Length: 165
Image (cartoon, rainbow, N blue to C red; front, side):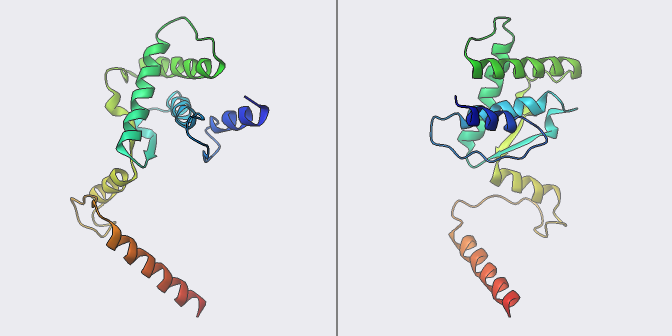
């Protein structure tokens, strides 16, 4: 790992920083996001205070599985040898300590981890705030959003044209 890569990964773990991960497959994107989630979990009052949003259910489930797997590994007192695994292990141990202090029991109650798709996040907002969202209640994502995308683009262009006139 070169210095720039190490610095970028370290910066991503700082809760005061925002960051965007752009990298090819197999480069550790999910690992750095998992580490970030673990870092944040070690400092919050409740795990529900953190939300991670993905594009797919598969990615959301993988994140949950990775966090639970890392927490399970962290119960072992033998630290791993690889540097990136050691970082994850230490972060996971901090989360286990916090979980014990706060009675979260994350290893049994992983449903407290708020890792969801952008569609399910938006659905939660609409369902929780039906008047404010002006949508009513019981919204659900559509499987074919082409008409909605076209409508959104047309509205965008219409607004841009009215701003330029």
